[in-house]
Image 1: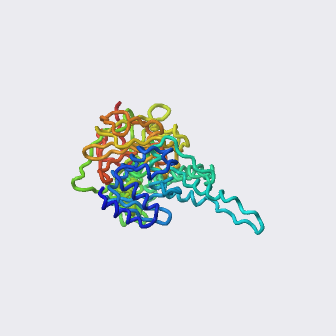
Image 2 (image 1 turned 90 degrees about the vertical axis):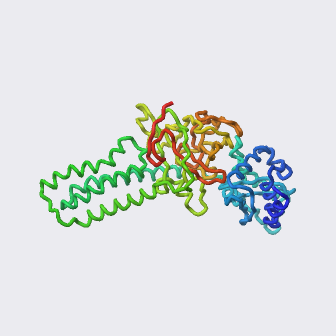
Image 3 (image 1 turned 180 degrees about the vertical axis):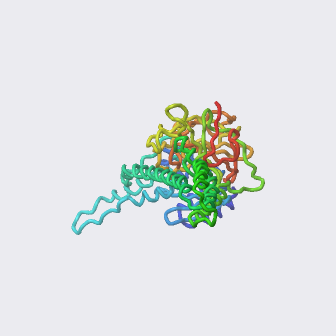
Length: 484
């Protein structure tokens, strides 16, 4: 980066010293230790800071400028991406703390919980002048989120920061489990209604309309319902209305129902189900990419078992694709997919977990399952040290959690949500397809243990991919079996 560019970047930060420090840090090709306080260097070595900065440049391009957003700063890159940063300086103008990504909002909120010093009453002795300076720097101790991802030991927040109540995670977990239960009950109730309609219709043409919409209903249930969370027999309920409606033909012929104009309930049911299914089918297709973006062919990173996509396809069946289409969404997640394992044996009986929404990671079949390299490539980043959170409690601070980035000649493969302490490769290591990399954990922003797979190009745009052992494109509910 030339001197002229460095000067223009500095000018974009104005006279704000934090902006100037961020420009000097992110705008230089190498981390300058003089910009970092000894306190931060004692927790995070220079080479780990360099890896973090290199990862941001590879994802977004070179730094174009820094904009201040109240007590936060926005790093703007040439590739069109941006990153929020929360940063603080010490008395010498060196960075004592900075947090990038979604963790910047959390760090800002943490500083707001520090109680302001109370005013002394009249005649009271004012507090010692050293009390305020000690409390203020203690708040800026957090290590950046992107750096903590590479640091095995997370930093404990200062005592003056208000910690969340222990009961909060339990509330979130219960809410997620209750939501899943309500979803299952809703699909079960809709199936029960479908089984009833053929026996109460008042005309033969109404029976025909009911029969016409049953295949659409079966497709909708199999594609959108959380079938991976239920026993295998639940999948048999989706086509059950087709069989029951055909059996109801005996009633239509036996009673001699008229074949005139059908009733409004039958018309409304047929139009509603077919219309909803058609809209969902259209929205379930993967978002079209560039004409030259041919899908990458990957070997399955999970082997020796049966696996199912829980998030894959278009925005109707993939929360990652839906989020990428929102304003400010991460376009690298457009084709991301989540994989879980269906357990084998009398204990699991083809289920992905022992229960509907168990509260322990160990009760999920995929937790701890080995992850293998899906391609030949070079390890660009290997992040470990983030804890596995409890099921049904997503981690917003580190969306990828422990993860591995593999560089190939066609793009970058990212495997996210790995188990803490299981990541084996190191940055710069050459790996071959099939090489063990880590184990599946629950360190990403998923609600339960799963492996997230995505592909992106050098500027952070998503690339479509396919799994060699799985027929067709990835879509929610699609299952495949891989031998060891």
